[in-house]
Image (tube, rainbow, N blue to C red; front, side):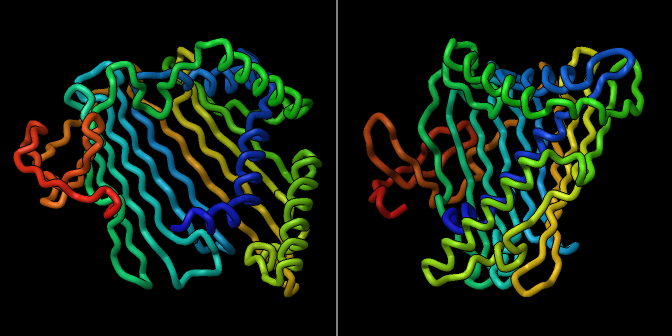
Length: 337
């Protein structure tokens, strides 16, 4: 899926998704703790984790028909011999009207055996057939101090702390008086679960005003360059977030276990027809501190594995044995991909 196409189509939808996440942080007080603080601390507590299992998915549907789905599964053990397994999958199309060019994308990454990194990437387009790009390759080595997980970056330096603090204050300001929409739905000795729902009148006015401004600008730009924007054609220049909802669970240490978010954007297209785009997203965290990353057998990689020697600045086509040792190597032009 071309990134240029994605960027335009998801600009407004991405904003809506981000606002939904912020709005979903509008949690109320309940009998045992402050929900907003509980959620905020749980989300911020994800930063810097170095051993965990994470499962994330997102789906976008137009008028009840899914047009884009993404899924990421990750095991991370920063200090283990097998440090990382990450699988990214995507299918559908960035343009909800362009169903004739559905595609699927798959990327699998492993970091293990003292820092060796292996990656398998392929895609499939219904209009052109299967394309494998990025090929199958081995990156060379990570240094032992490198952080390999999506969450395991070091946020302890002063600059990062200041950025995190600004983000926290911005969220606090945005949430404002919306801290009265939480429902405690139950729990036990190991976890607690909460939910919230916001209808149209509870969505901050700045959200829908911002969407309207973005779509109006896109329409004006399209008119100036003599083209049409498919998303503007579909949703018009004044779409709204009509409702948003969320559930989340934390364990007895306050760590995030699950987080589900949904939101609906409605609009009237330039043809006068009404449409809605529904976003659903899910995050599941597990095995904090106890994750053991699955080991990958490098000998299962194909004969045309691409390898780039960072130290020698040279590209090769290689074959690995089960221990990740190169058993055959042939120089190749790195420009060939």
